[in-house]
Length: 331
Image (cartoon, rainbow, N blue to C red; front, side):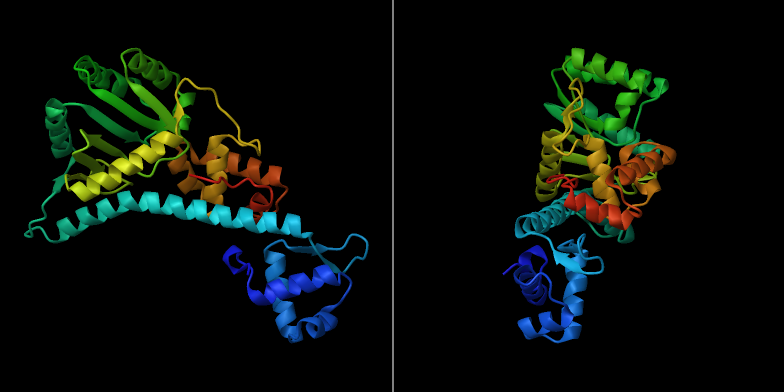
Protein backbone atom coordinates (compact mmCIF):
# COMPACT_ATOMS: atom_id res chain seq x y z
CA UNK A 1 0.00 0.00 0.00
CA UNK A 2 2.86 2.37 0.85
CA UNK A 3 5.35 1.08 -1.71
CA UNK A 4 5.06 4.31 -3.74
CA UNK A 5 6.46 6.12 -0.68
CA UNK A 6 9.47 3.78 -0.47
CA UNK A 7 8.02 1.37 2.11
CA UNK A 8 7.82 -2.18 0.74
CA UNK A 9 5.19 -4.68 1.89
CA UNK A 10 7.51 -6.52 4.30
CA UNK A 11 8.73 -3.35 6.00
CA UNK A 12 5.16 -2.04 6.19
CA UNK A 13 4.03 -5.28 7.85
CA UNK A 14 6.78 -5.04 10.48
CA UNK A 15 6.05 -1.33 11.04
CA UNK A 16 2.36 -2.07 11.64
CA UNK A 17 3.25 -4.90 14.00
CA UNK A 18 5.58 -2.61 16.00
CA UNK A 19 2.81 -0.04 16.31
CA UNK A 20 0.38 -2.68 17.55
CA UNK A 21 2.87 -4.43 19.85
CA UNK A 22 5.53 -1.86 20.73
CA UNK A 23 7.47 -4.03 23.20
CA UNK A 24 7.88 -7.17 21.09
CA UNK A 25 11.31 -8.40 20.01
CA UNK A 26 12.42 -9.81 16.68
CA UNK A 27 11.24 -13.34 17.41
CA UNK A 28 7.71 -12.30 18.40
CA UNK A 29 7.49 -9.86 15.48
CA UNK A 30 8.41 -12.73 13.16
CA UNK A 31 5.57 -14.83 14.63
CA UNK A 32 3.11 -11.96 14.45
CA UNK A 33 3.93 -11.15 10.79
CA UNK A 34 4.57 -14.74 9.61
CA UNK A 35 8.04 -13.71 8.47
CA UNK A 36 11.45 -15.18 9.15
CA UNK A 37 13.61 -13.46 11.75
CA UNK A 38 16.10 -12.57 9.02
CA UNK A 39 13.31 -10.90 7.01
CA UNK A 40 12.25 -8.96 10.12
CA UNK A 41 15.83 -7.76 10.68
CA UNK A 42 16.10 -6.62 7.07
CA UNK A 43 12.78 -4.81 7.44
CA UNK A 44 14.08 -3.12 10.60
CA UNK A 45 17.12 -1.90 8.63
CA UNK A 46 14.78 -0.44 6.02
CA UNK A 47 12.62 1.23 8.67
CA UNK A 48 15.73 2.67 10.31
CA UNK A 49 16.95 4.13 7.00
CA UNK A 50 13.51 5.70 6.51
CA UNK A 51 13.60 7.08 10.09
CA UNK A 52 10.38 5.20 10.94
CA UNK A 53 11.89 3.59 14.04
CA UNK A 54 14.13 4.97 16.76
CA UNK A 55 15.78 3.90 19.97
CA UNK A 56 13.53 3.83 23.03
CA UNK A 57 14.19 6.53 25.61
CA UNK A 58 12.47 4.53 28.37
CA UNK A 59 13.98 1.13 27.51
CA UNK A 60 17.55 1.58 26.20
CA UNK A 61 18.52 -0.99 23.60
CA UNK A 62 14.98 -1.41 22.28
CA UNK A 63 13.52 0.05 19.10
CA UNK A 64 10.25 1.94 18.92
CA UNK A 65 8.13 2.78 15.88
CA UNK A 66 7.48 6.49 15.40
CA UNK A 67 3.80 7.46 15.41
CA UNK A 68 1.97 7.09 12.07
CA UNK A 69 1.32 10.82 11.65
CA UNK A 70 5.03 11.58 12.02
CA UNK A 71 6.06 8.52 10.03
CA UNK A 72 3.83 9.27 7.06
CA UNK A 73 5.01 12.89 7.02
CA UNK A 74 8.62 11.64 6.85
CA UNK A 75 7.78 9.35 3.93
CA UNK A 76 5.85 12.08 2.12
CA UNK A 77 8.69 14.56 2.58
CA UNK A 78 11.23 12.08 1.26
CA UNK A 79 9.08 11.27 -1.77
CA UNK A 80 8.47 14.96 -2.40
CA UNK A 81 12.21 15.63 -2.29
CA UNK A 82 12.91 12.78 -4.72
CA UNK A 83 10.27 14.09 -7.13
CA UNK A 84 11.75 17.60 -6.89
CA UNK A 85 15.23 16.28 -7.61
CA UNK A 86 13.90 14.30 -10.59
CA UNK A 87 12.15 17.40 -11.94
CA UNK A 88 15.39 19.35 -11.61
CA UNK A 89 17.31 16.66 -13.49
CA UNK A 90 14.72 16.61 -16.30
CA UNK A 91 14.95 20.39 -16.69
CA UNK A 92 18.73 20.32 -16.75
CA UNK A 93 18.71 17.45 -19.26
CA UNK A 94 17.02 19.64 -21.86
CA UNK A 95 20.16 21.73 -22.16
CA UNK A 96 22.32 18.59 -21.96
CA UNK A 97 20.38 17.13 -24.89
CA UNK A 98 21.18 20.18 -26.94
CA UNK A 99 24.88 19.76 -26.12
CA UNK A 100 24.66 16.12 -27.19
CA UNK A 101 23.33 17.23 -30.55
CA UNK A 102 26.31 19.53 -30.88
CA UNK A 103 28.76 16.76 -29.98
CA UNK A 104 27.16 14.41 -32.51
CA UNK A 105 27.41 17.08 -35.16
CA UNK A 106 31.10 17.50 -34.35
CA UNK A 107 31.68 13.75 -34.71
CA UNK A 108 29.87 13.64 -38.06
CA UNK A 109 30.99 16.86 -39.78
CA UNK A 110 29.98 15.70 -43.26
CA UNK A 111 26.41 14.94 -42.27
CA UNK A 112 23.80 17.65 -42.69
CA UNK A 113 21.88 18.44 -39.49
CA UNK A 114 19.07 20.93 -40.12
CA UNK A 115 18.64 23.31 -37.21
CA UNK A 116 22.15 22.82 -35.82
CA UNK A 117 25.13 25.12 -36.42
CA UNK A 118 28.49 24.40 -34.79
CA UNK A 119 30.71 27.30 -33.74
CA UNK A 120 34.34 26.60 -32.81
CA UNK A 121 36.39 29.27 -31.05
CA UNK A 122 35.54 32.54 -29.35
CA UNK A 123 35.90 34.61 -32.56
CA UNK A 124 33.21 32.66 -34.41
CA UNK A 125 30.97 32.71 -31.34
CA UNK A 126 31.24 36.50 -31.01
CA UNK A 127 30.71 37.06 -34.73
CA UNK A 128 27.57 34.91 -34.71
CA UNK A 129 26.21 36.62 -31.61
CA UNK A 130 26.82 40.01 -33.25
CA UNK A 131 24.81 38.98 -36.31
CA UNK A 132 21.99 37.63 -34.16
CA UNK A 133 21.94 40.82 -32.14
CA UNK A 134 21.71 43.06 -35.19
CA UNK A 135 18.82 41.00 -36.57
CA UNK A 136 16.96 40.76 -33.24
CA UNK A 137 13.33 41.89 -33.47
CA UNK A 138 11.43 41.38 -30.22
CA UNK A 139 13.20 39.78 -27.25
CA UNK A 140 16.26 38.06 -25.82
CA UNK A 141 16.25 35.63 -22.89
CA UNK A 142 19.52 34.83 -21.15
CA UNK A 143 20.90 32.54 -18.45
CA UNK A 144 24.11 34.10 -17.05
CA UNK A 145 25.67 31.54 -14.67
CA UNK A 146 29.20 33.00 -14.67
CA UNK A 147 28.84 35.01 -11.48
CA UNK A 148 29.75 38.65 -10.95
CA UNK A 149 30.79 40.90 -13.84
CA UNK A 150 34.14 42.63 -13.96
CA UNK A 151 34.25 46.39 -14.46
CA UNK A 152 35.75 45.81 -17.93
CA UNK A 153 33.00 43.41 -19.04
CA UNK A 154 30.33 45.80 -17.81
CA UNK A 155 31.73 48.74 -19.77
CA UNK A 156 32.00 46.56 -22.87
CA UNK A 157 28.36 45.43 -22.55
CA UNK A 158 26.76 48.82 -21.87
CA UNK A 159 26.66 50.20 -25.46
CA UNK A 160 25.14 47.02 -26.93
CA UNK A 161 22.52 46.64 -24.20
CA UNK A 162 21.62 50.32 -24.36
CA UNK A 163 21.13 49.97 -28.11
CA UNK A 164 18.90 46.91 -27.73
CA UNK A 165 16.75 48.48 -25.05
CA UNK A 166 16.52 51.67 -27.11
CA UNK A 167 15.13 49.58 -29.99
CA UNK A 168 12.40 48.27 -27.69
CA UNK A 169 13.87 44.78 -27.35
CA UNK A 170 12.54 42.95 -24.29
CA UNK A 171 15.58 41.79 -22.31
CA UNK A 172 15.14 39.18 -19.60
CA UNK A 173 18.19 37.84 -17.81
CA UNK A 174 18.59 35.37 -14.94
CA UNK A 175 21.82 35.74 -12.95
CA UNK A 176 23.03 33.73 -9.97
CA UNK A 177 22.01 34.94 -6.51
CA UNK A 178 25.71 35.35 -5.71
CA UNK A 179 26.01 38.41 -7.99
CA UNK A 180 24.07 40.37 -5.36
CA UNK A 181 27.32 40.47 -3.39
CA UNK A 182 29.15 42.30 -6.21
CA UNK A 183 28.60 46.05 -6.07
CA UNK A 184 29.71 46.68 -9.70
CA UNK A 185 27.20 44.06 -10.86
CA UNK A 186 24.47 45.50 -8.61
CA UNK A 187 25.08 48.97 -10.09
CA UNK A 188 25.03 47.56 -13.63
CA UNK A 189 21.76 45.72 -13.05
CA UNK A 190 20.21 48.90 -11.63
CA UNK A 191 21.34 50.71 -14.79
CA UNK A 192 19.71 48.03 -16.95
CA UNK A 193 16.48 48.14 -14.95
CA UNK A 194 16.24 51.92 -15.36
CA UNK A 195 16.24 51.39 -19.13
CA UNK A 196 13.66 48.61 -19.13
CA UNK A 197 15.76 45.50 -18.65
CA UNK A 198 14.22 42.79 -16.49
CA UNK A 199 16.57 40.98 -14.15
CA UNK A 200 16.03 38.08 -11.77
CA UNK A 201 18.36 35.80 -9.85
CA UNK A 202 18.31 32.10 -9.00
CA UNK A 203 20.52 30.06 -6.65
CA UNK A 204 21.77 27.91 -9.56
CA UNK A 205 21.35 27.73 -13.33
CA UNK A 206 21.52 24.68 -15.64
CA UNK A 207 23.74 26.24 -18.36
CA UNK A 208 24.72 29.46 -20.09
CA UNK A 209 22.07 30.15 -22.73
CA UNK A 210 20.88 32.95 -25.03
CA UNK A 211 17.53 32.69 -26.84
CA UNK A 212 16.78 35.27 -29.54
CA UNK A 213 13.20 35.95 -30.63
CA UNK A 214 12.24 32.43 -29.47
CA UNK A 215 13.62 31.13 -32.80
CA UNK A 216 17.36 30.77 -32.15
CA UNK A 217 19.28 29.55 -29.13
CA UNK A 218 23.01 29.66 -28.45
CA UNK A 219 24.49 27.40 -25.77
CA UNK A 220 28.06 26.30 -25.05
CA UNK A 221 29.18 22.83 -26.03
CA UNK A 222 31.17 22.54 -22.79
CA UNK A 223 30.09 23.96 -19.46
CA UNK A 224 33.75 23.93 -18.37
CA UNK A 225 35.01 26.11 -21.24
CA UNK A 226 32.25 28.23 -22.75
CA UNK A 227 34.68 29.99 -25.10
CA UNK A 228 35.83 26.76 -26.77
CA UNK A 229 32.70 26.19 -28.80
CA UNK A 230 28.97 26.71 -29.00
CA UNK A 231 26.00 25.40 -30.90
CA UNK A 232 23.29 27.49 -32.54
CA UNK A 233 19.91 25.71 -32.49
CA UNK A 234 16.90 26.64 -34.60
CA UNK A 235 14.83 23.45 -34.60
CA UNK A 236 11.25 24.06 -33.51
CA UNK A 237 11.10 21.18 -31.02
CA UNK A 238 14.42 22.09 -29.41
CA UNK A 239 13.49 25.78 -29.11
CA UNK A 240 10.13 24.90 -27.58
CA UNK A 241 11.90 22.87 -24.89
CA UNK A 242 14.57 25.52 -24.22
CA UNK A 243 11.99 28.33 -24.01
CA UNK A 244 10.00 26.22 -21.55
CA UNK A 245 13.15 25.70 -19.52
CA UNK A 246 13.79 29.44 -19.40
CA UNK A 247 10.20 30.27 -18.44
CA UNK A 248 10.26 27.67 -15.67
CA UNK A 249 13.48 29.04 -14.17
CA UNK A 250 12.29 32.64 -14.63
CA UNK A 251 9.04 31.93 -12.78
CA UNK A 252 10.96 30.59 -9.79
CA UNK A 253 13.66 33.27 -9.82
CA UNK A 254 13.65 36.36 -7.59
CA UNK A 255 13.37 39.92 -9.00
CA UNK A 256 16.67 41.68 -8.43
CA UNK A 257 15.28 44.44 -6.24
CA UNK A 258 13.33 42.04 -4.04
CA UNK A 259 14.67 41.22 -0.58
CA UNK A 260 15.67 37.68 0.30
CA UNK A 261 12.79 35.58 1.57
CA UNK A 262 13.21 32.49 3.70
CA UNK A 263 10.99 29.46 3.41
CA UNK A 264 8.99 27.81 6.18
CA UNK A 265 12.15 25.99 7.32
CA UNK A 266 14.04 29.28 7.64
CA UNK A 267 16.23 28.65 4.57
CA UNK A 268 17.20 31.19 1.95
CA UNK A 269 16.86 30.08 -1.71
CA UNK A 270 20.65 29.62 -1.86
CA UNK A 271 20.67 27.48 1.32
CA UNK A 272 17.78 25.36 0.05
CA UNK A 273 19.67 24.78 -3.20
CA UNK A 274 22.82 23.75 -1.33
CA UNK A 275 20.82 21.22 0.69
CA UNK A 276 19.41 19.76 -2.51
CA UNK A 277 22.84 19.57 -4.17
CA UNK A 278 24.34 17.93 -1.07
CA UNK A 279 21.54 15.35 -1.09
CA UNK A 280 22.32 14.61 -4.75
CA UNK A 281 25.98 13.94 -3.84
CA UNK A 282 27.66 17.01 -5.38
CA UNK A 283 31.13 17.99 -4.12
CA UNK A 284 31.99 21.38 -2.63
CA UNK A 285 33.76 22.38 -5.86
CA UNK A 286 30.76 21.38 -7.98
CA UNK A 287 28.40 23.28 -5.68
CA UNK A 288 30.69 26.32 -5.80
CA UNK A 289 30.56 26.34 -9.60
CA UNK A 290 26.76 25.98 -9.65
CA UNK A 291 26.32 28.86 -7.19
CA UNK A 292 29.01 31.12 -8.64
CA UNK A 293 30.94 31.30 -5.36
CA UNK A 294 34.44 30.26 -4.30
CA UNK A 295 35.07 26.66 -3.12
CA UNK A 296 35.94 28.08 0.29
CA UNK A 297 32.56 29.81 0.51
CA UNK A 298 30.84 26.64 -0.66
CA UNK A 299 32.53 24.57 2.05
CA UNK A 300 31.61 27.13 4.70
CA UNK A 301 27.96 27.28 3.66
CA UNK A 302 27.67 23.47 3.52
CA UNK A 303 29.36 23.07 6.91
CA UNK A 304 27.02 25.66 8.48
CA UNK A 305 23.95 23.83 7.17
CA UNK A 306 25.21 20.43 8.31
CA UNK A 307 25.88 21.88 11.75
CA UNK A 308 22.39 23.43 11.89
CA UNK A 309 20.95 19.99 11.16
CA UNK A 310 23.01 18.45 13.96
CA UNK A 311 24.41 15.88 11.53
CA UNK A 312 27.80 14.18 11.66
CA UNK A 313 28.06 13.37 7.96
CA UNK A 314 26.63 14.48 4.64
CA UNK A 315 24.58 11.29 4.40
CA UNK A 316 23.06 11.91 7.81
CA UNK A 317 22.48 15.55 6.84
CA UNK A 318 20.43 14.35 3.85
CA UNK A 319 18.26 12.13 6.04
CA UNK A 320 17.78 14.87 8.63
CA UNK A 321 16.99 17.40 5.90
CA UNK A 322 14.10 15.20 4.75
CA UNK A 323 12.88 14.75 8.32
CA UNK A 324 12.99 18.52 8.95
CA UNK A 325 11.37 19.42 5.62
CA UNK A 326 14.52 21.24 4.49
CA UNK A 327 14.65 19.82 0.98
CA UNK A 328 12.77 22.13 -1.40
CA UNK A 329 9.44 21.02 -2.79
CA UNK A 330 10.25 22.50 -6.24
CA UNK A 331 13.35 23.51 -8.10
